[in-house]
Image 1: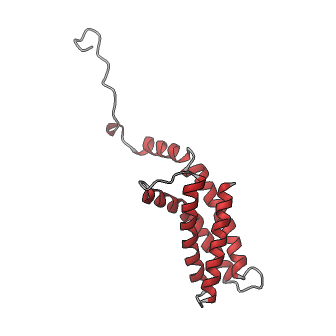
Image 2: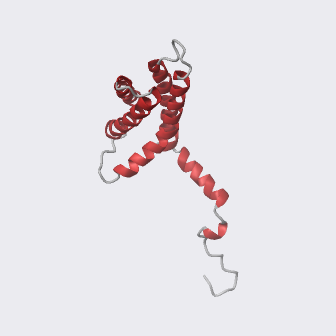
Image 3: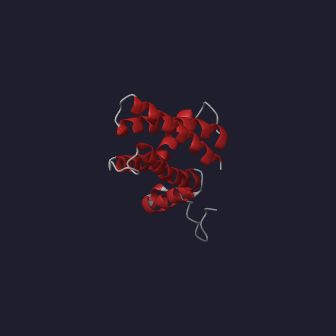
Length: 155
């Protein structure tokens, strides 16, 4: 629920900046790109403080990088949907605000799923464990010493 509320804040900021950019004479794709970057940073700050309770100065760059990487796929799809719909120049779906809404819904679904199951869930840890088992050679893994043979002086 909190993630959705923050997404609505991000949507509002994005819509406001898109409007300002369009009124300033920017092309829709450029105004949307600026709006997307601003909204992502604002939602990072809000999510960091209120949703995930991780407000520390120590790891802000690391947290921002992880958040941006998690959001990159959703934001790319958001932007792609926006540009695709807006470029049709059709009466309804070509409207920049309808395209903004459609792209934002797609981004919300992707970003929530990634945050819930990969970034903050156990899927990333399980994936890394599988990767290590497949690609890390047994020689590079620490191993226990071989058991002593019966009658040897080793215990």
